[in-house]
Image (cartoon, rainbow, N blue to C red; front, side, top):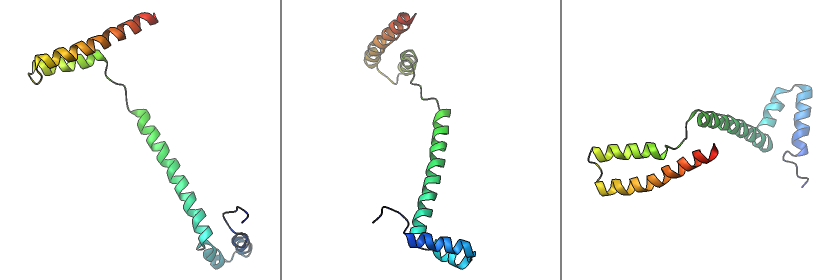
Amino acid sequence: MTGRIVPREAVHQLAVAMAATDWEAIWRFLHTTPARFVIGLTILAILSVIGYYIVRATRDSMDFSAPSANELLADFRQLRESERMSEIEFRRIKQTLGEQIRGETRDVGGER
């Protein structure tokens, strides 16, 4: 095997068909297995590129930033005030987020 995807005979058939503009021969060639394989791969490649650009455009338009510790604490404070969270749970969360807030404050202060 020479490592070619399309056999020489198929390429020769296409060249002969195109030179004579024998549309029936071209049609027969397009229904051969190697031609269908190449056409299928081409369609797959085109659809993959289109899909990639759609996903990329969609992701670029979305905001994936995580909420800050201050925003989370405000949300948990609202849960506590609406009594959907116990005081003990809120204190644990507040302690954990307090450490993160202090870390964020140090990071901002250290960058100045």
